[in-house]
Image 1 (cartoon, one colour):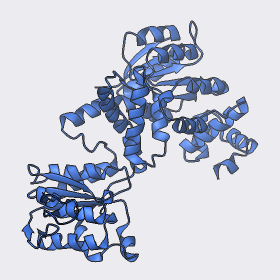
Image 2: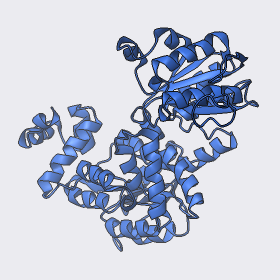
Image 3: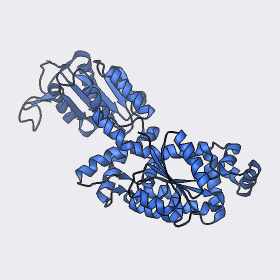
Image 4: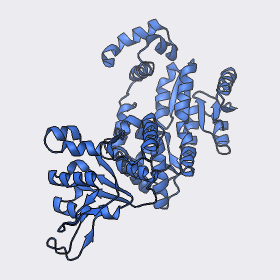
Length: 445
């Protein structure tokens, strides 16, 4: 299904040009000539994106923008303006516009801006497709995630021991569970153990079990996690945190497929596939004497690296919508999605806590939300401030706005002066004059 775009422009020739161009790019186009018509039609017809001029009769673009975003803040709106009206364009962005384009419009820039703008429109359909395919565990379609899924698909049916590496919050446990569910052991037990959460004595008892009276408090016999996982898979999370003594005992399990309960000399055969995970650099731990090299090579038959969220930021909208669907249902809310401004905040934030941090932020936002869409006010103050600094909060004068806009356009065109001048609708000579006037060569460094 083609995306539907509403063009709002009183200049008939310009509107026809845009309509022809966008239809060529396979968009479904509706065209009106003023803001009042736009406000009325938006209430009757769903659109994926709006391209709207600022200066129009009956109702100008800024007023129409405020009405439309009040009615449905999730519709991304791209404003069109002459370069001399850039102050109004910046005001539009502050009032909820997705972005703005200056006339004369550059076709390549129009296409790129619209494509970025429409990304959010694909989210719900993508989530639905994932759910129908039963693939809701590892969410995303970025290249790093596609590669990870392909590797899982290749290695899961084997019996190989797998080591999963990745920073905290990246989803290592989800990867382990997915491997089990795609393996030949999927109908057998899947058992998890957080090795960092237990002392050495408790971890040994947890993994291998113990006999009655083996230690103080052992008032009855207990089967360990390896025994519980017999025939299936055991996931050892934070394997880099276990002691050297426990490493020796784990190595024996890998080599001989046998365990001994604490307080017993009996060898018990177990058929268990081991998946381990760590956020540590085990090679460095070996060099520092904290991890056995022989155990490392036993665990590291196959290695899977889970990417940071920063390396797969294209997945942020999909993940955010996925978590929102979960928490809205959990909290009995009817939240449809995110405003473009809120989603822009999420994309720009540096997620040091990775997917887990994003999940927590979305849960908090879903609890605070009182409207149909998550807006910037429901996001943590830190994330709001980051976006304010990156946008135009510091802009005070028209010259400041012009400077910011030129820098933004230079960045979008990879500092290519000819392309930047073309996008701005000015000559290359004028651009060089502006760069010198505002000392922008220093700002670029």
